[in-house]
Image (cartoon, rainbow, N blue to C red):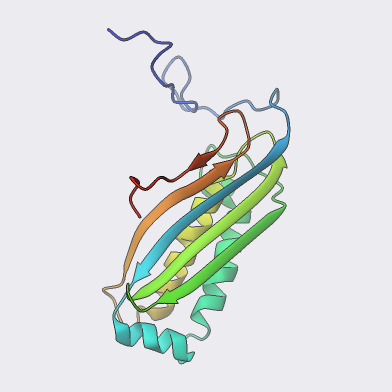
Length: 169
């Protein structure tokens, strides 16, 4: 049987196995940054529609960018055990890519506080991707949202995390 100390613990589960919010009150406030990415895959024709600005619902990428930023700010309302955070910066970049074909979505979130912002970055990417889908579903229902993942995390006790070449794209 493995030693309990060598086994990683789920921080949101207490000794009774019940869900709990992590107490971060003793942690120092440090600068923390998280970056997440994902992509929306579609046909070349739908991508051309986005790039031309002729989507029926309007500016697809601009709307998705605002939706992602808003989502990052409201993550604690969407993910039950997340702490509400006063974010200092949220950037959301969306690039079209004919090779996919589709859109690459990347969010970067920054805070000075006692807990990280990985969930805020992942939520921003997820909602931006969903918004792109919503804006174009009238012309293509087979759009796929893929590869949403954490790319980088800086700050806090666990230090720096960066996706390596072995990680999925």
